[in-house]
Amino acid sequence: MEALAKTTHAVPVIFAGKAEGNFDIYLQEKIAKLGLTERAMFIGKITNEQKIAHYAKSLGVVYPPFDEDYGYVTLEGMLASKPVITCQDSGGPLEFIRHRETGLIVEPTANALAAAMDEIWQNRSWAKQLGKAAYEHYQNLDISWSNVLSKLLA
Image 1 (cartoon, rainbow, N blue to C red):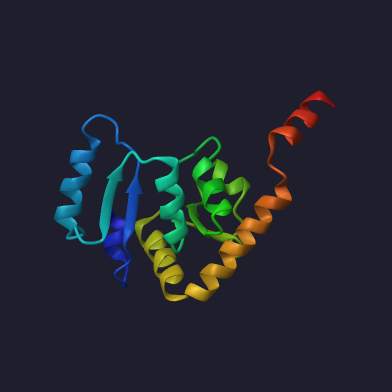
Image 2 (tube, rainbow, N blue to C red):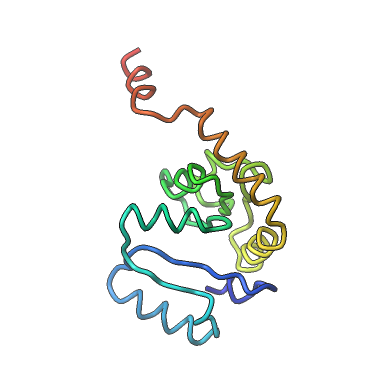
């Protein structure tokens, strides 16, 4: 939320998924306090079809977890031909994203995330190039069950 508040452009962000406990209430209060009610949209739990539709309409994917073990969101973004913004301490996503080739890897600060969102927002043709490269990189990784099984059984 703090990163979104620091963007210089009116970058909108859609948050999908269900927050645990009362965390969603905290987030809604934070959005109101930061004046982001028009730009930060929480859509809760969604179907795979809805997720695909949101990815298709998006300019990029922001996924800055701390020390994530794998990061399916990263792979989903790449499959949707979208650049992924992640952080230097995000763990699993760093295995897939190439800085300034398939997405952006930034410091885990609100200022750095804001700058990355602004850069993607301002340079839409470059964002599309990054997304295309992300998709191609995903395909080259050959992430498939048949490949995993053949390596495990070898």
